[in-house]
Length: 315
Image (cartoon, rainbow, N blue to C red; front, side, top):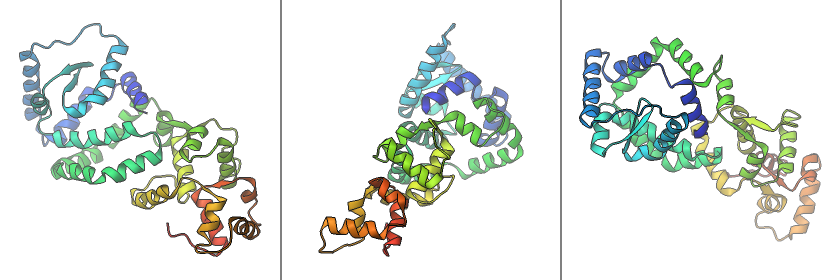
């Protein structure tokens, strides 16, 4: 995901300088362009005093390498990228360069590192729940005035923002097209996430979505989110942080559940043996053809089964 973003940012340029400067002036300098100019001169003097000169004839891959390195090292405050060139600076120098918006940087950096580690939605939810206190702490350190300035600036320049985002990702419209362009996964990846084989996943998708994903090799991000929610919670096309604690509890129970697990779950404390319980369960789920076609099920199907068997889940 990060590699795709680096390529997109490099190919299309993050934002045009004039718009970027306008945003910085409004959010961090209260609209005072003179203060912004003074800060720019300070930064220019900083580089001049250090006698740092941008490399000429830097290759495309060198610039991308700098960006990749920055992703890994920026959290330590040892790098600064300027005009496509990566410079090493001390922690104090880095704080000087970001003076006035270091709190915003620290919060965004924490988010960025989170996404760098994300390999799946399960991974993201686990990371978010483990680090939400730190994210909240960093977010609350951001001056409210800066947040309000950004909201006001966005409200006044919404069309400009949309134009810039379109150019970053090289698309004609927003919403799902951007997400499709930015991230895709596969049935194999989803199968691995839920600890099943691809044949079983196809059975799940057929049961829950009909033929919608038949023969598909690529799964786009909005579809992946919808599939994930449908399997582990309820059909939704978005991730809601309010649901994360509930989903995490289910993740800890298991990503998929076999027939034996369901049999003992719905007959807690029984003296019947495994074979007896499975026989009773099969008879009780006679109206669910999918039950006989596979051996593992997602949370959502298991919940349907338990309700049919007259039980309720506590997770």
